[in-house]
Image 1 (cartoon, rainbow, N blue to C red):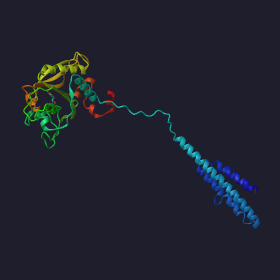
Image 2 (image 1 turned 60 degrees about the horizontal axis):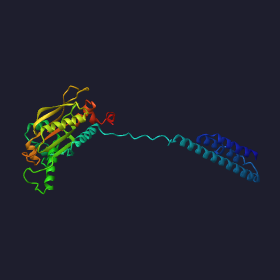
Image 3 (image 1 turned 120 degrees about the vertical axis):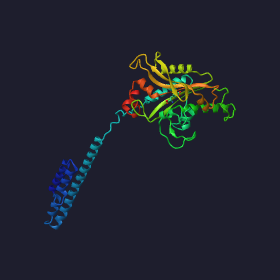
Image 4 (image 1 turned 30 degrees about the vertical axis):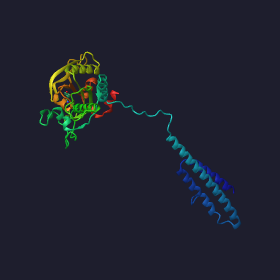
Amino acid sequence: MNDLKTLVEQAKSAFDLAVTPADLENAKAQFLGKSGRVTELMKGMVALPVDEKKLRGAAINLAKQAIENSLNERRQALADLELQAQLHAEALDVTLPGRQRGQGGLHPVSLTLERIESIFGSMGFEVAQGPEIESDWFNFTALNTPEDHPARSMHDTFYVEGGTAQAPNLLRTHTSPMQIRHAVQHVKRHRQAHGEPSDAALYNGDMPEIRVIAPGRTYRVDSDATHSPMFHQCEGLWVGENVSFKDLKFVFTDFCRTFFESDDLVLRFRPSFFPFTEPSAEIDIQFPSGPLAGRWLEVAGSGQVHPNVIRNMGLDPERYIGFAFGMGPDRLTMLRYGVNDLRLFFDGDIRFLSQFR
Ligand code: DAH
């Protein structure tokens, strides 16, 4: 029976030599396969007498079992090794610092709007928001720009059907409609608070002043390096009993000098035309130094609010008077940061935008 003991040992060392499952299957075939060594031993029993056959058969079976056991052990060992290798390959180092989330920042135009709001806020102006889809009435007619007025052709935009004071029908071409919307609400609230009928004639009683800015998006059919079909404006309105062009000059000069942090900034009020103001002026600024020094740069339209517009606010122009202006925050942002192409603001390129964080 020594041969069986040797066979079992040989099988075990053959299995132990196998380093892959395929090696192991080959080794198994050598011992347990159809023409393997164990099968050969079985065949060799044919010639033995019956009682010897029994003993020999039992011994071969034991040896076969021992071989199968060591095969299974080796199988398990190889599977364990494979699992270890896999775990090692897929190991995560949980002590590595995490990948940071990029820190966002405000859009440069938003930074400008915040700046505008805080400067005008410090001068007692409220901030009002209005709809970007506006009606013909608020965008044009109420602002003294009737349907056949040539000034409308400079405000080409997108129209939809409808078009009453209640039904919006165009993308607003400027923030000026907010003058009417805000003033009407202001007057209405004041009259309600004082128990006055709100459908009465133009108001000429006492009333706190209207002092408001209205920033927001505006739209026109226009596109080049300094014009975008969507752009921003910020309207300003100050209406009271004694508000004059002098106040406009003071407020706007103060605003520009604060905005650009330059006390020597010079302003020029250049006569112009807008249907909703009379007289009207474009406001130009000039920097005392820096790359833009010496050039006049247009930053806003302005003027004394036209009496027809005061009427459309529900106020009596014999008592109420004021000024308005409309400026371009995109332009102010370009000037402040030295950006020469407006489209950069709206392309959404993170390499550009992240420079303003
Ligand atoms: N709404 C004008 C425009 O978009 C700008 C403007 C001019 C606004 C004069 C005003 C103003 O309030 O008084 O071109």
